[in-house]
Image 1: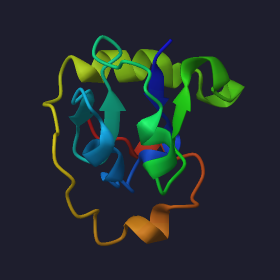
Image 2: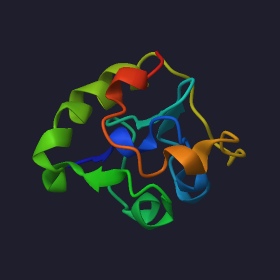
Image 3: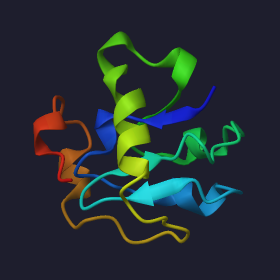
Length: 107
């Protein structure tokens, strides 16, 4: 089992999760983070740190978010690792509770 970043992260991209990851499994895109499933050690530390509540264990993903398993795996191969916390986008708080943001994902 691995952990998966879901739609709630899009346009929020808080990086609190990155600070606690012991294996640097996060990858950074323009407006979204993903977890590299080949690097994740299932430690659960990132889940509690995510202000957007966007990280789930693969087995606990809501049905509507199941597609993010493949999306995380795909984008993790393309995007660079992020190993330090960064400031979130200036408008991150405005996007925090917005639903259905997949169409806004920048690759």
